[in-house]
Image (cartoon, rainbow, N blue to C red; front, side, top):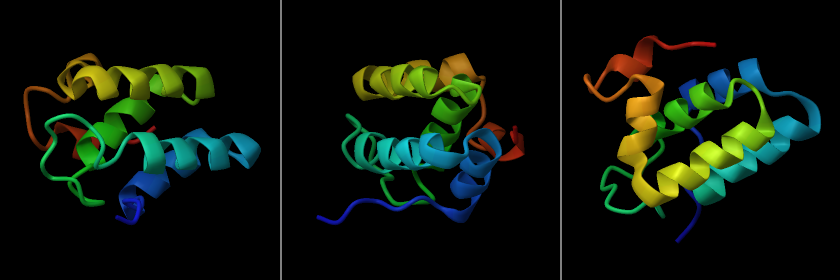
Length: 99
């Protein structure tokens, strides 16, 4: 199964938070570790993953170590990441966030 690519909107947010080698590392982390391998997440295409990917990016605040922690938390229970990012109460809350 090929990896789930980043959507245009995910890439825009990634570009706003990371640059250089950190950008490449962050993108790879999202594609490989925050994708269709998340437990119990059924909408695992590039648009369907935006809510979780935006949440981990928001929680990272542009720090690679924080992004790694957020992705690890999502791998355990992505709902905790949505709550921490403020995206849990509305299915569209993530759409208005931009760093």
